[in-house]
Image 1 (tube, helix red, strand yellow):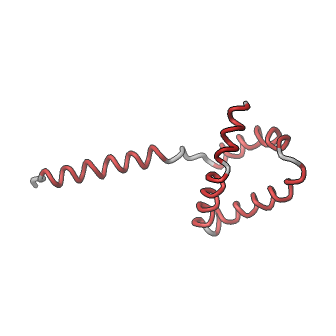
Image 2 (cartoon, rainbow, N blue to C red; image 1 turned 90 degrees about the vertical axis):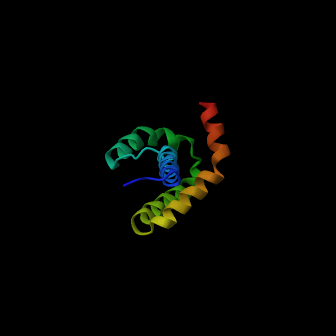
Image 3 (cartoon, rainbow, N blue to C red; image 1 turned 180 degrees about the vertical axis):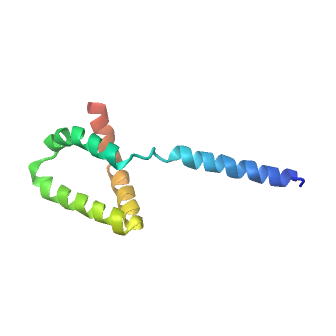
Length: 97
């Protein structure tokens, strides 16, 4: 089978796009790794959270866990919104450390 230049360009373009998408996606973390990391960081994180926000934070976490199991699109959209809306705060927190 002979491949034309146009087909070759298309194949290369698709491969480059696929590689860019893979590079843009964060590394997958197993449930075990997630729990271990959370155990180590949870105490420190909760010291920073004002007591007034504890109930809201717990409700948000429960909602995200439920969405991750029963509504993947809602979970992804919620995470996208949170990450977008909190980007400046995350930058400040990282620069403070």
